[in-house]
Structures are given as structure tokens and as C-alpha cells.
Image 1 (cartoon, helix red, strand yellow):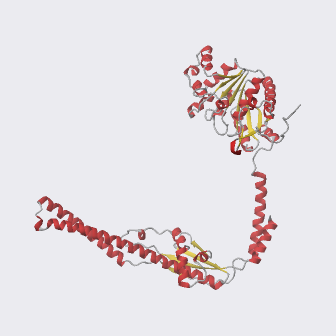
Image 2 (tube, helix red, strand yellow):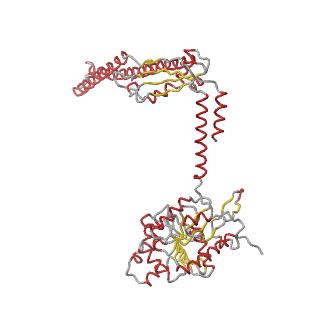
Image 3 (cartoon, one colour):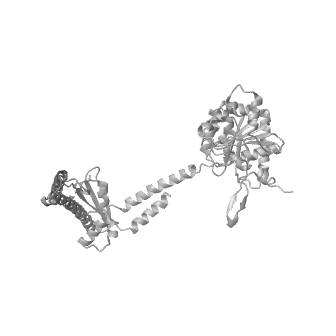
Length: 500
């Protein structure tokens, strides 16, 4: 990159003619009308004046007065305008291959700017005078109307004469005030500013070949180093199963291949995100979930695990799909499974099984019966049984509806703990679909109440640093990570394909 940038700088310097720059300084004077009315009385804004000095109207004045062969748009390409610190000084610079043209251009733009500013302020003053004249005419007409009321032939009542006298005096005072403002505006002198320092003839080019080559080499070195750093750091996605296992310090129990796609009308494609264990039981995806089931059963028997929380670092990583298909795989092995939709913010499990979700887990957690520590086990079982949906022979589901934050915060409450303890006696496994741990605090509150945590990561989108933060936060709350699932893994496309 350094050599390439150096070569470009050399070629550019050889082919580009030398450029000379000349600068004229202009002191901008604030213009205020005696009446303080209108735009001419506004506070001076040097940023606006900087834009005016490099505007198309000013370039047109340069073109008309100084007979330039270039168009106004072409002239503006040579001009830069800067403000010296917080002062009222504009530095107008003109660049050109000919030194004398650079000096003439800088002085021409400075003079044109002062002329344009003087004309603009004068036009504003004339507009104010015209407005005052119209106001005076309107008030004069109103005053004459009151004079007509006071005429002897009108024979007005005393109250009408008093009102007319009052209005005539008020109109007279307003007319006098406006006439005074108009005279002040007409007598005001407009001083747009002055040329503080004319441009000087530049003696040498400010863009030498040596400078260009030096800058090119420096830019090339910096660009090469930046590209190397970006190449090493910018792609923070997971780099396969081993990377995920190292970041979590737990094994990857199974990689799940991308689910198959089917074609919709008009050629559009949609990725299937449903229950592959039911819809495609002989597919590679279903076999991957059976592998996950085998390893979960093995670890559960060794570690005495019954309740498993399925979560991920961020959203859209497939945790709900993994939770539902894992529950179906365990039920296929004739294990009694309770699948709980514990994502109270964006529940999805009811969509997989086409179940209504008018009530569910939020209603159970807020029920006074479950929150009462003295309630009998049978009463608690009866209350929970009302929320159970049987979807297969060995699988039951507790759905959820979107709940406000104060209800979602109860995932770590005593009511949730009593719910899990009550269901351990009836089911071999309790699978809980939880919200992303880094996106909501609900999963971290629930982690200490379950036996293990199953982390789902997407091979194409999960951030490595997010996985590291997830592990750290789970360790801080006492959550025990059982293992991980690498979802949408494309590293071994034929691993789960076997034909007789």
C-alpha cells in the first residue's frame, strides 16, 4: 500500500501543473439600522458571511466586473474562504496555475463580496422603508376617519367624540414614531466592511512534488497499517465450533445446519424457521436435533439436570427454534417435557404450535395463589394445569403473551421458583425459551433458578465479544452453562445426510 500510494503521488505530481495561491483579507463590519428593525439589525454571523463570500451571486459579480473568461461555477472551484479564529476577518484565497491570476482572483472576490454585501443591506433597508411607508399610509387613513367623526356637520354624541379624539391622538403618535424610524433608515449609511490586506503575488507553488510524494508515502503507510488492523479486527463473527467452545469454556453439543428453503409464488424464497422435527423428521436438521438430544440426555444424567434455560447473546439467533425442536426431540425419546415460553417481551412458541396466547406464563406469575408461600401443592398444580397445552404425547407447552416490564421482571421471583419446583415432579425436562441475555435482564434473573443454561449462537451473525460478555454475565449470577448450540452451521454441509 505504501509503494502504491507513493507511485500514485509521483504520477499525480508529474502530470499536475503547479498551483499558486493568493489570499486577500477582508474586515467585515456589522450593519445595524438605527431602528433595529429587520435583517439589517441582526447579529453578525461569520459562518454565514463565509458562505456568502463563496456564493454564486458573488462569483457573478466577479465575472461581470472583471471580465473573467471562466463561468461563475468555474471561478468558485478556485476559491476557499476561511474565518480567522473568532475574529471578523475573512481570508479569501484564490488558487490558479498562474501567479498573477491567483492574486487578481483573490482581490476580485474580496471586492465583489463587499459590493454584494453593501447592495444586499441597502436592499433590505429599502424594503424596511417601503414597509414603514405602507404602515404610515394605513394609520393616516385611520386618523382621517376619526377626523371625519369630529367634523361639526357629523353631530356626533359626546361619547363618540371622546372615543374619536382618543383614537386620533393614538394614531398620531404612531405615525410620528414610524416617520422618525423612516427618516433614520433613509439617513443611515451602510458600511459592509473594508479590504484589510490585498492579495500579494505568490512567489512559489504551495504544492511541490516533494511534498506530494511525502504525503503519499505517509498516507500509504497509514492506509496499509489500517487495512491490516481492520482485516484482523473488523470481522468479530464466530469462527466455527472450536471458537464458540473456547469463548464459553463449554462444549458445543451440536451444530445445527441451515434449515431448508422453499419457493413461494413469484419466485420469492423464504427460509423455514418452524418445527423441523415435525415438518421434516428425516431431514439433516432433524438428525442434528437428535444428536443434540443424545448429548443433553447424557449430561443431564451425570449432572442431575432437569430444567434447561435456552438463551442467546442477541436477538434473531434462533433460540426459540432450538428450544422448540429440542423439546420435540426429547419428547420423541418418550421423555415427559414441559416447554415454557419465558420470553415475555417477544414470545414466539405459540406461533410454532398454532396456540392462542391470551393467557399464559405472565398470568401464572402474577396470580396471588402462586405468590402465596403457604398455598398447598394441589392448589398450585390445579392453577398451573389450567395453562398447560398438550401438543404431542409427551410434550406440554405453557405459552406467553407480551407482558409489561414489571411482569417480565418476575422471571427471577419466588413465584417462578415455586412454578419450577412444582413441575419437576411431573416432567422429566423443563425447557424454557428465554429472551436474549444481553438484550434484557430477564434471562440473567432466571439463570440461578434453573439447573443449566443452553447457549444458542448463530454462525453467521453472532459477535465473538457478545459471547464472551454472555459467559461473564452468566458466571456473575451463578448460571451454569451446560453447553452451546451452533445454529445455521455451514462448515459441514453433508454431515447429517445419510441414505441407505
